[in-house]
Image (cartoon, rainbow, N blue to C red; front, side):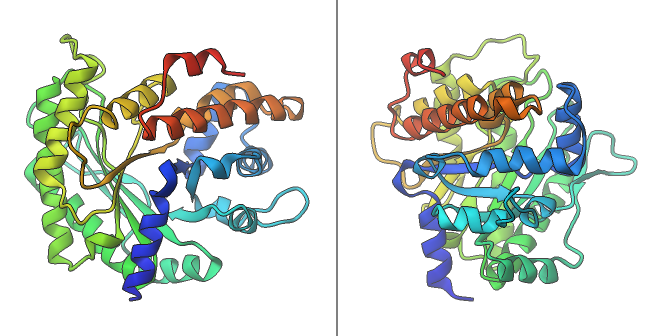
Length: 342
């Protein structure tokens, strides 16, 4: 393990107020989003959509790293240049999703365990040789009456830690993503309680696996009430709960926290990220950045609609959202920025 290289990569991913773009949707997920808009669910359509994203001019001003999927990392532009080379030449670090998805736990409705540890060392070695610099593994936790259960939390935290250790052995920075889902009626306080439990377990297992915390990126949820919660939570309450949770659990040696958007609207995700970067009266020990997928891509996807004639307008929308989040990292995002949306 080259510890300095891992530290340098982790620092580069959170440098200059930039963030991550998660374009690592699996083929079934990408196809579902295409189907909802009437876009053909073909490999060529997926390739065209991903090319639209990575060749967007100016993206490297706001985005430090892009998370790819196995299909995507092997694809090329229409002119024959590999997506990896396009990213490398633009100064954007390439990452790769390496988990195999969350699977239902038999006899435990609502609980899921993420698969993918089998053969992971070999896959990581291949991706590193191809030019990837970091990787991502997602675990999900639903909140319900008696959910998530302790065994589910422990099993997922252990898998995240094993993945992270294998990544660092392969020379890749692990993005550790424990996501407490927004689905449900739970309150803000309940989400904070569960997020603390999950992150406490994750860092316990990371330390047991001797993962170097200076060479990881944490990708958690913001602390939010459930989508169907009857109680309204103010923006200040969300911000205070999220920061209190992180200060309670996340070691200061972690270089950066890259929030997932988790189903928030693009504008809400940017607004809340901005609040997180402005509310603290004292400097926080980690960079607070973003690792958004739909909250950056969805407006562009709706404009593109699978039509070449819409590429330029879709790229303008994509860059606009990236710039909004770049501003939010500096605490400079405003509603007025949305009025200039092309």
